[in-house]
Length: 546
Image 1: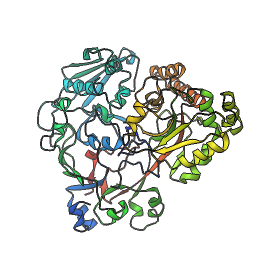
Image 2: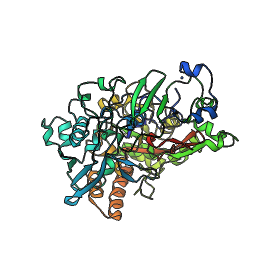
Image 3: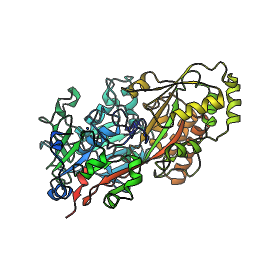
Image 4: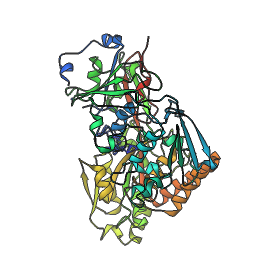
């Protein structure tokens, strides 16, 4: 989910969206799912020997940022999703190899050529308090995502469900118009077009099943009243940490580790220091720390590298001047040597993007979809648009969360095009600003909700998509996405997505920058901590080695 500040699903969890949006999935911002924050009184009393911590076997400590919301329908950032995914379960889930697996649904059928999907729930499902969990709970939970009074930041994930977006926009007030139906232990989903990837889509934490009551306010999220459907329940929440206790009624059986402590405050220490002190068992680390940790005799064997299914990109407000003119967007896209800039700024900590779809996503094109570096052509395009040498170009705001590439881009645009950008970094509700009143040029990062090219194309750039902050619209792009989603042959699917990504390259509503590389320290003996690139660890699978 994705916005991170980079989306859910954006990856800087303090501000992000999951693609969760990840608004600035940059090494400079450390837009990571597990982030450094400050020390609990317990930690302040002194470090616990690492061997003793591991030997207890009854808990694990994970360094992670605080959640902006634990409500799956309200959140949009990867950090919040990383926590809520432990508390509320989805119908399907991804394994370590990104294969879709049954979760609350034990199976599903694709009917009418993929225009209708029926999920069959497992028998005997319950919430953590023992109350039955059935198909009606799934439909109720999903309708909350498209609630017209407060639609989810990731409502675009429902784009293929019949009537869902019209309902979310208030165009049809009847929830029965949404293509969702509960029948016994079956959930039927009616789609506007064949969408064989929908079982993968519903693995996103946005589609988690929640108990009744959340629609009336956040009270059910209080630890004293908490009821969940996931592997863990909420036991306690403070500014320093969130404590989870295993759900003995979890459908897959109680997790191996009874208690998970999610640390938000380590007293100003670095993640590496907290790990060395034995106070943290699992933490992301800064890129510059990873460069020396790999050579450390003790820490090196505990360092894990993970290529994230995420992309950092710049976007333009294509709904108004000057970037409503495709020639202006093309000029900006071609004026900067992105292939040279990214490695110069990031070194080995990021991979220069060759398109919007990151490495590791199944069905990704092998073609280079990054705009060509052509400063002479860029200057001509700008002149053709009426701004020769940058003369007469309107005052333009370039707003980001402080990506490490920003200053260099501002300088290159001025040097090559003669355009001076007004550069700002923003704190606060970045995604709210993007949704309501986007700046003319902005930065974003996105972590996959599900591993498909569509999660980086149609979900982010489709006409009317909730995460299409630049408000770009292209009938040809939309048609190419529909072509890919409606196909069953892998070659035809690839052809549709390639066509769509080629349109993005040529019309430049966004400019892909880099794919992130993450580094994690994981305690020796802790099993199941290796991520699959989606930015969320399935804590139900954690265990201490016997």
